[in-house]
Every structure is written in C-alpha cells, then in structure tokens.
Length: 184
Image (cartoon, rainbow, N blue to C red; front, side, top):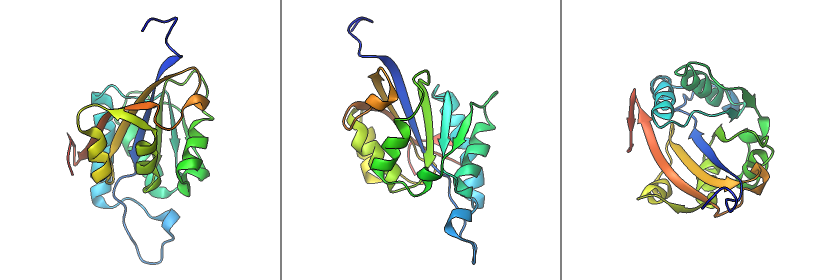
C-alpha cells in the first residue's frame, strides 16, 4: 500500500491495565493505592513499552490512585515522559465511553497510551481488534491481568475514525517484577 492509497497515518493505541492494587480497609475504591507487587510491576511495564518501541505521544489515564501511580512509575522509566491527561471518565468507563474518550485525541498524536481498568480495557481491545499477530488475541480473551499491555495498530486520518474491528492487535504482554514476560 503506498502513501496515496493508505487511509491515513499509522496509529497505535497502547492499552495498559493498572498494576496490582492494594485493598486497605476503609479506603474508597477510587483511592486504593498500588500493592507492593504493583509497585514492582509498574516500572516493568514502562521498561517493556520502551523495549517494544511503544512510547506514547500522549497518555490518557484514569483518575484512580492506582492508575495514576502506575503511570508515574511506568513513565519514570523513560527519558522524557509525554504529556498525560487524567480523565475522570476513564475510571467508570465502559467500552463505548473509552472509545469516545480515545476518539477525542488530537490528530497529531500517533501513539496513544490508555491506562485504566478492567473489564472495560479488555473489552475495548477485543472490540477494536479485527485481527491479531500470532496468538495475542486468544491471550487477551483468556486473561488481561493487572499490568497487561495490548498494542493495537491501525491506519486512520484521525482518532475519531477508529471503529470496532479495524485494528490489528500486534502485541500482548504482561510485565512482572522487572521482567517483560508474555505470561502471568
């Protein structure tokens, strides 16, 4: 496909489920922090994104404490983190809401990182992926655990053109404790 027939720029949506959270008594769900394992896994997620050459131009992050901490620890692994927008809609979003948030992304952003929560993130990946490389789609269907990363690639003139079934799932991994693994 040459530039004249390509339907827009190559874009990547990188989906990162927040790292493992703690369940302290008396703390509201929105305010739950990362557990010790989450504090180990979030930097590993940042390193995995760098190793996979998936550093974003912009990050959209849930306002929940565990998602914000995941962002802070993951992005600290990069030389210069991109801008981040903490969007309260991501915290309570379903697939339709997440897609609406993603579609508001500026055209010049080619790689977008979305940090949020399940089950909405897993459902978003499965909704957008029309196809996948190797067994990545099946792995996401089986489980999308904390710190899981999915990379969806598609061509589009703008983010608002992203539609169900139009992306290729090119990567699915689960970084753990400093190692970017492909399992749980």
